[in-house]
Length: 581
Image (cartoon, rainbow, N blue to C red):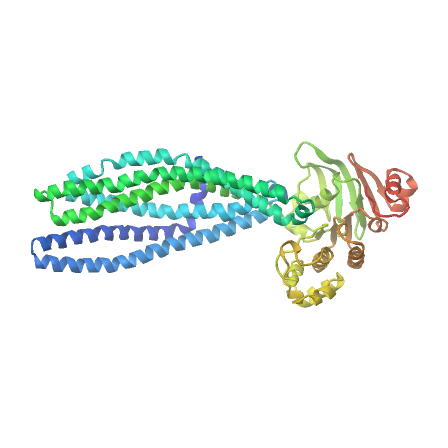
C-alpha cells in the first residue's frame, strides 16, 4: 500500500505548526552526530601521540576530548528532549483534533463505522504515526552520522573502507526485498485489531442480551477466530522480521573480521596509523548501527502507511456544516412542519414518502404505526441527524437545511427509550442539559423528574458516579435522570421516542407523571405505543408503508371507523393494554 499524494500533503500540512521545533531538533541532532565523529578523531590523535611518545599531542587532544564529551552531554539531552516534546505535542493535538472531528461528523456518517473501529484508529493507529514521525528525525541523524563516519573512514584508509563495506548495499537490497510483504500483513493486523475492539464493545454494551440469550460461546468463538487470525499474521510478520537477523549479523560481523585482518596488515606496512585503526574500529559501528536503524525505519515506515491512511480517512470525512446562519425563531410559525418529505437511508429504498404535517405551538402529536415504517426516523430528521431525500422540514419557519444545526438543536430536546448516561456523577449528567447550571437548578430539575428522592438515598447523593451506560442504577432511575437533564434544558420542542416503553408499570407511572408536569406549553411529538400516551394527544398521525394514512384526535379517528379504529380494537381488546401497532 502506497501513501497517496493526498495523505502525504495532509501529513505535511499537519506538521506545519511543528516546523520550528523539528528544525531545532534536527540541528541539535546534527551537532550530536558531528561530536560523535569528532570524539573518534580525538581518540585517533591520542593513540597516535601515545604510539609516538608525543606528550603535548596527548595532553592537547585529551582536553579536546573532555570538551567534546561535555558538549555532547548537552546535545544528547536536548536532542532527546526536543524529539520527545515534538512527539508529545503532535500526539496531544492530533488526538484532540481527531476526537473533535469525530464529534462533528453527522450521525449518518458515524453509523458507517463501528465504535471499535474508531477507537482503534485513535488508540492504535495514532501511536504508530507518532512513532513514524519520531523515526524521521532519527533517520536524519543516522544518515548524517553515516556520511560523516564514512567520510572520515575513507580519509583514514580508502582501501579498508572499500573492502569493509562492499557487502552493505547487497545487504540493504536483500533486507528491502524480505521486509516488503510485512506491510500487507500489517494492514490486515490493524483491521483485525478493530474487529477485536468491536467484539469487546458488543460484549460490554450488549451484556444483557448476551447473557439472556446465552451467547457467550458464540462471542468466545468469534473472539478466538479473530485472535487466531491475528496470531498467525503476527507470526508471519515475526517470521519475515526473523529473516533479517542473519543480514544484520553479516553487516556487523563481516566488517569486523575484515578490518581486523586487513587493517592490521595495512598498519604493519605503514599505510595507516595504530590510532587510525583504533578509530576505524569504532567508526564501523557508527555506520553499521545506523544502517540497521535506517533499514528498520524503512520497514516500520511501510507498516505505518496503513495507519496514516486510516487516520486521514476519518479526518477527510465531511463534518456537519456549522457556517450557516443561526435559526431565526418566528414564534408565529408552527414549531415543526413537514412538507412532502421523502427519506431513504441508502438512497434507493424510501422509508417513507410525501409526508406532510404540522405540529402547532403547545400541541401534542402522537405517531403510531407498525415497526420499521419511520416513526423514530421522523424524530431524528427533526434533530438534523439525517437529511431528507426531498421535501422540506421547517423549524419555527426555517428550512432546516438553510440554518446551523447547532442553533436548531438548542430549541429541541430528544429523549429515547434508552437514554445514555455518561460515566460521570449524577449531577454532571443532569447538568449536560444546561451550560454552567447551578446545583440549585440541578436539584430543582431532579425534583420535577421525581428523581431527587432516590438520588438522595444513594451513598454519595448527587456526587454518585454512574457506571458506563447507566450501570449501577435501574432503568427507571436512568430515565428519570435523563428526564431531569431534559427539564434543565427547557427547550420549547420535546421529542419522545416512547421513553416509557422499556419500563415496568410503576416506573412508567412515575415517569409519565413527571412528563405530564414538565411538558405543558411545549410542542411535543411522541412515538406512541401505549394508550396513556395516545389518548391525550391533540393530533394522532397513523403511518403505514405508504406514509400517512390518517390524522386526527383519538375520538375523531375512532368515529371515522378507519384503519386506526381497527388497529386500536385489535391491539387493545378488552384489557386496553399496549397499542402494539
